[in-house]
Length: 140
Image (cartoon, rainbow, N blue to C red):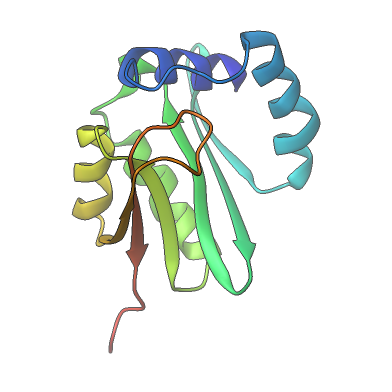
């Protein structure tokens, strides 16, 4: 999973350098993220090709992390991970991405998320402007 996270971040987010070393990221994923039990993975022939972490905090559901192997982007894997995650979470569901991450922004908007706020990045480790998205409850 750490490999997927690191490759994806380095390929698609060059404007937002990692605030931690690769070794620190690997430790965080193995010691903190995985033990939450809220991590989903997508597997391909060569191993893990995608990962998503979800959580609930203060009555709000979150897509915390959604990363794919760069070579696996555009194959519907992210959509399948997200669709499954949406079955596990109650609305409203939020996700945050960097303002300059146009691929992620299109992805979330295509899946019914709407931007509800923008920030200058002062509250994230990378200090990059970001967008908070929310997928409201479906009416029905």
